[in-house]
Amino acid sequence: MTDSQKDLEQRVHVDLPRVLPEQMVVSVETTLPPDPTGGHDVDTEFMIRHFG
Image 1 (cartoon, one colour):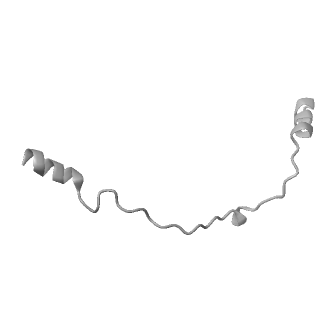
Image 2: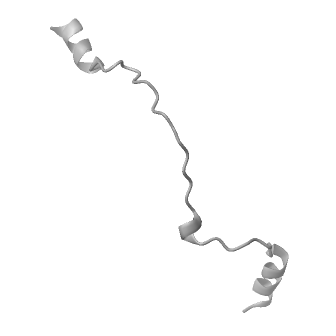
Image 3: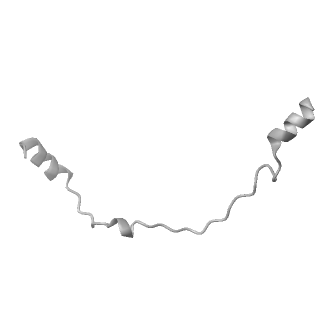
């Protein structure tokens, strides 16, 4: 290991607990937002209205 790597390790050392990937789970209950188009196919309705 070079002197610059040792120096960097000494300056950047942070005392944090080790976290395993299995512990990295977040669960939040959510509700889906309402459909902004109200269930309509706006592209098809536009075509029918203006070109049909």
